[in-house]
Image (cartoon, rainbow, N blue to C red; front, side, top):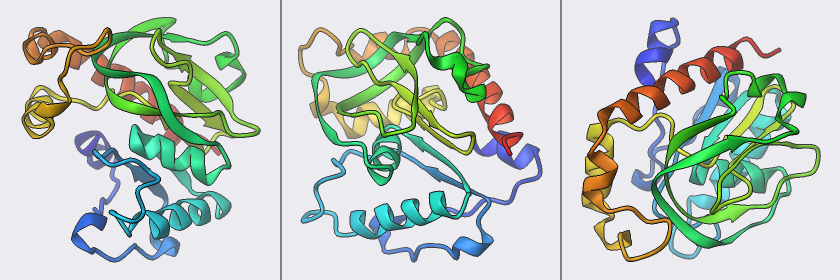
Length: 215
């Protein structure tokens, strides 16, 4: 996403909560993009920064900021809106089809989503849809793959931002996740088709453009 955002004239700052970076001044933030991680959102005892991060997300939503959550970030945003986060019925890791839901057109944020597309996944948890949210997408393994809450809050369980290099680093760092399972691909299968990354990135660009125009 960085190249797209900088290309549109946005200035970016990164907060590495795991490295004890302080949370930014909310008054200087237009967008809050909350990314993924290997932890679960309810592991506060092991990751003490999760509690202040949840509060910050809630404050950003209340302040009317544009808030985009991806993977763990989507779960944190759902939690901030009152949706329960829990273990999913299946772990989903690799490239699997995602379909747009019938209710998705009720949200203008859904317009860039094709009826069906391939997305990169790496998650075991899922979220219940927060009150007032519109479910945007689903997959065979996970019913809630995305949601919009108004026009300024968006959660995506899947990774359209993934690049081949980022996937390689993720596979190396989390190789122990690649066990046998109906929705867990082998590493070589995830990296075999560079065109998948390009297609996903194009869909993401459309989503970001639509999100940017939200009022």
